[in-house]
Image (cartoon, rainbow, N blue to C red; front, side, top):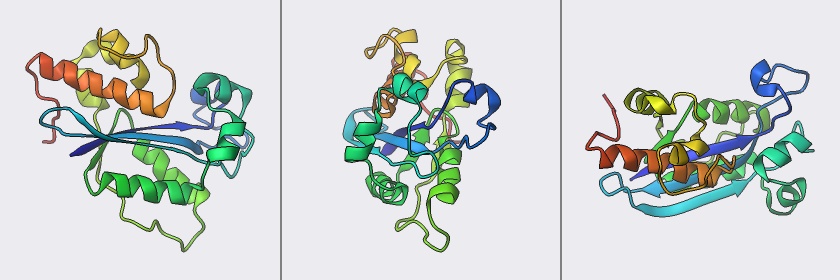
Length: 192
């Protein structure tokens, strides 16, 4: 099995262009989405989704809420601490490769520092990570400038017509890009 995962994290107008370098701009994870997939058939075996209460910026910006559709109320009602969500995510992965379209593993690492008290390591080992964006962009050059949620639509695959910035929906969009490669008779991964 492989696990395709995606994150949504705190943001503000212009934060991406600034590299989250403005005052108190931290990329705190607010949502983890993941799907467990059989790499031979590309059939989904399970889904995972968690909302997380950010610590440094507990009030979600209007920009973030409009971009993702994740409200402060939803996070207050269903959100958990980052350490608990990370442990649940690691359990869902069950040592399978965790594949992302970008360096989402770096953001998870930042959040280990930002949101987990010193001396409290994750309860489970983290899975091995793989960023498939360079490979997908090389194999499908039309995806180079696209966010994960826009992949399916750009390739004429099933899914939302535009990027929704929902972590779980973005995982399905990434999966559609892999299915597109498979349907073209190309390898879906380059692990070498």
